[in-house]
Image (cartoon, helix red, strand yellow):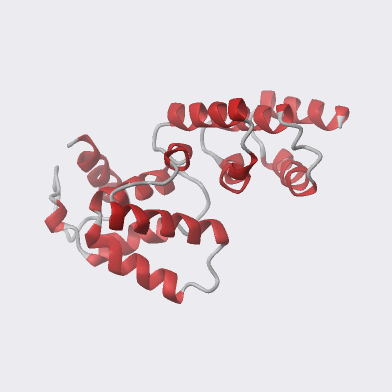
Length: 190
């Protein structure tokens, strides 16, 4: 019930839902227009809308399948990560299971869950998650970005040219002065 209220809150913030002011929405009331808007949010950079849209699509389930399949089929220009996320959602819809739930934790609406997932990855030293964690440099929450940068440093991934360049680009965008300083320190020692 709480997720349904979050979906409605999101939709009401971002345009009225067919001119109705609903407090709750039944899955049966979700139409293709709403699903397309949620799908479009997954094509953008990491944001609160991205996280909420991902979770909403998972909860909507089979009703979202056709729209997601269509986007994947016609989405030659989609970034690889976006395609992976759509495939992850489709696998969940088809099987009601996620092969690697840690990926969903990385993109959970709760920033604490995202930060904890990063800590688990650091602890396990699993490098297979690199393509999933790098986009979190743009996470709206400072603590998630700080944990991610610590993970990259502790796992000596700063020497990876792709990671190094992403961090350099991010340094210019980072608004948190503590994180900026940490990044500068990391660059000095590498």
